Length: 556
Image 1 (cartoon, rainbow, N blue to C red):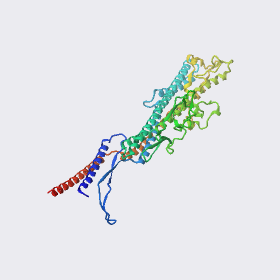
Image 2 (image 1 turned 120 degrees about the vertical axis):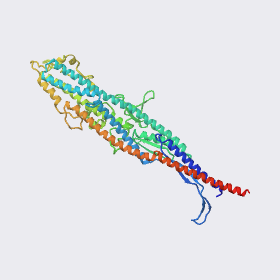
Image 3 (image 1 turned 90 degrees about the vertical axis):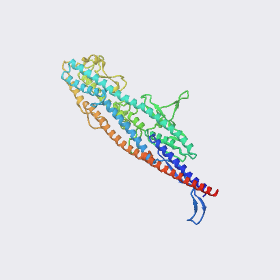
Image 4 (image 1 turned 60 degrees about the horizontal axis):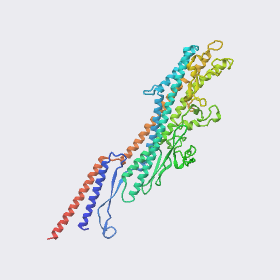
C-alpha cells in the first residue's frame, strides 16, 4: 500500500474512536434519563485488499483500517419480559393491598387513625346491646324504652355511614378505572407512532436507539396495567397483545372503550372490535350489556392465581377490588341482586364464590350488610311473635300499630326493596313515642319473655361471616370478627406485596446491570477510546513525516 493510502487507515481509526467517544459521552449525559438504555459501539475490520494470492496459507493482504459498524443497545430480552410480567403482578397486589388498607381504615375499630364511622358504629352496636340489657331489667320503664329506640336509631345511622363509605370507595376505584383505560389507549397510540418512526428510520442505515428507548419505556408502563405480550418483526415493528387480544398490530391500534352500567354507573372496559352494537333510529351506535358480553377485557370470574397469570395488572386489581355492583346480604346465600331471597329456586349455585368472594369491597359490603339485616329482621320478628302470642288483630292491640299490624322497630325506606342497610330506617312512630313499646300485656303483666328473646337474639351464635367460614358468631362478636378478618387478610396481602416487590426489584436490578449506565465503566471506555484516538493520530503523524521525508529527498 502507498503511503498516501496508509493515511486512510489512520483516518478510519480517528473517525471510529471519535464516534466511540461521542457514544460514551451520550451515555454519560443520559445517565439519569428515565428509560434510557446504555449504548455500545460495535467495531469491525474493513475488507482486506489482496495483493497477491500465494499458497493457501500465505496470501499477501493489506488491512484498510476499522469500521464503526453499529451503535447497539444493551438489552436482555429474557430480563425485559420477566421484569414486565412481575411488575404487572406487583401493581396488582399494590392495588389489592391499598384496597384492603382502605377498608381497614373504614371499619377501623381500635386502630390508630381509623375512621370515625367505623369506631362510632362499633360503639353503637355495643350501646344497642347495653340498651337491651337495661330494657330487660325493667321493660315497662319509659326511660329504658326511649334508650332502646334511640340506640336503634344510632345503630342504623352509623351502619349507614359505614356502608356509604364503602360505596364511596367503590366509586373512587371506578373513577380510577376510567383513568387506567385512558392510559392504556394513550400508551398504545404512542407505541404505534414510535413503531412507524423506527421502521422508517431503520429502513436505511441508521438505528433509532433513542426512539427504541421511548418504546421500551412505554412497554414497561403498559405492563404495569395488565398482562401483555409482544413480538418484534424484522423491520423493527413491535406488535403488542393485552390480555391475549391484539392491542397494537399491523399499523392499527385496537383501543379499549368503556361501557357504563345504567344501574350502578360502574365502568367496564371492552374491546371495540369484538363488541356487537345496536343502532337507534338516528343511526347512532348503542352499547348494551349483551353486546359487550364477549368483548370484555377481563373475565373476573376466573380464579386469581399466579400459576394462571391472572393476578397481573393494576387495572384488573381495581376492577376486582371494586366489583361490578354494590353487594348485599342475600348474595352470601347465592342470591343475585335482583333475586327474591325468600324463593329458594332463585338462588344460583356458586354465585358467592364466582361473583362476590374475589372482590375485596363487595365481600365486606355483603358481610356487613348481613349483620345489619340480621339484627333488624330478628328484632322485628320477636316483636311480631310477641304481638301474635297475645292475640290476633282485633282481639289485642299489644305491640300493634293503629292498623292492627305488629309494630316494627325497623322499617324499609322503599317497601319494594330488600332489608338492606341502605334501605333501613327506625320506625318514626316509635322515635316520636317510644312508649308504644309498652311491653305490658293485656293482663298487665310485664313481658319478660320478650326480653329473654331479645337478649338471646344478641347472644345466640348462629351466624357466619360468609359461606366459606364455619365459625358461628353472635351479634356482639360478628363485627369484631369482621374487623379481624379484614386485618388478617390485609396482613396476607401485605406479605404477598412485600415478597412480590422483592422479586420485582431483584429483576429490575439485574436488568439495570445490563441496560443501566455505569459511570466507572464509561470513564474507562473514554480513556480507552481516547488512547485509541491518540494512537491513530500518532500513526498519521508518522506517515506524514515519512511522506515529507520522501518528498524532500526526491525534490533535491
